Amino acid sequence: MVSVAIINLTKTYGTTAAIKDLNLEIKDGEFFIFLGPSGCGKTTTLLCIAGLLKPDKGEVWLGNELVTSSERDVYVTPQKREVAMMFQDYAIYPHMTVFNNIAFPLEVRGEDKSEIVKRVTATANLLGLSQLLDRKPRQLSGGQRQRVALGRAIVRKPKVFLLDEPLANLDAKLRVKTRTDLKKLQRELGVTTVYVTHDQVEAMTMADRIMVQRDGVTEQIGTPEELYNHPANLFVAGFIGSPEMNFTDCTLIKEGARLWLDAREFKTPVPTQVAPKLESYVGEDLIMGIRPEDLYERKSVKGSTQKNALRMTVDIIEPVGPYLLLHLRKGRCSLVARVKHTTARVGQEVDIEMDPSKMHIFDKKTAKAII
Image (cartoon, rainbow, N blue to C red; front, side, top):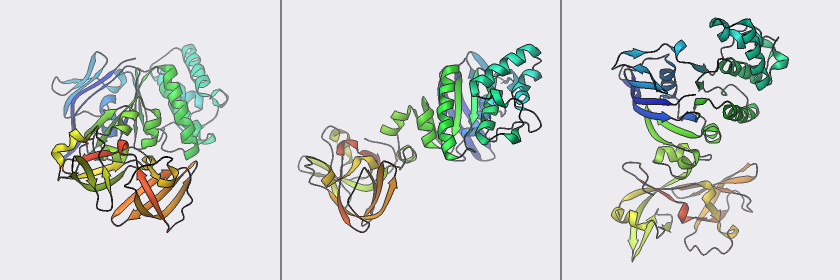
């Protein structure tokens, strides 16, 4: 298995930059995910690693081998990179059996027939396909086809797996099960895996680390926990999390020795431990972020002493399994709170509190996180 290093990678289409000066190192054996909206450069980056696309500038390294460099005129063909790529549509051959689909890359390489049978059988056992080897793709479910495509990648024993939204065509229930199986399989094989998705829940549950991309630019790289708890900017904060973070325009004011965030409809104190970081922003317009799970109904918080609860009207109540989403409004302020239970009804007013220690504060001009 190998690491993957990308240095100053740039790819443009006309005047549009799909990737802008990307620098990235993926560790040996890591499950790394490219996450972002459509058109942000995820698949383009994956294709450059695979060798299916030549960048305009920059280098790609697989371990200690330089496989792409526009400056040094180096280009190793996809066949020689020892990577396996799996696409969203699976691309399995409809006229071939499951056995022949999995065996195909070995046959192309001229492997011995006995070795082919041995490796296909082992791969089928690993993926639970042993009873389906004689079937054609039209006789398989979507999940089974997905496993056949995965088997065709595994059987080659590649150094790197490249997966481009492989679960997108599965129904919701099967997608949840398959992502668990895929993560477990990757752990067993220990193969460096680069995975593309626009689904942040998928990314958060599967990745060792995530790179969030937008318009060809890397917004942040980190573990799922780092991205969720310490987003670098407004885009990452809003993209990671379901339901997404609440954002409210506010002004930083100082009353006596205390700093406050004034959002017109409510004021909330700045925690003393972070106040020094905000002293230079007094009088400035900022954006406060708070996640739905960090908002509470006042009566549900035992021992609450918060004197700055916000009285808001309940617009919608969404039951979501073990919790409820309360859609709340007051004037220009709209918030979503995630609670375990409520006695409130649509149209009623409730007192909402927030945990000040869980606030995120962003510079309105730069969109970068301050706190």
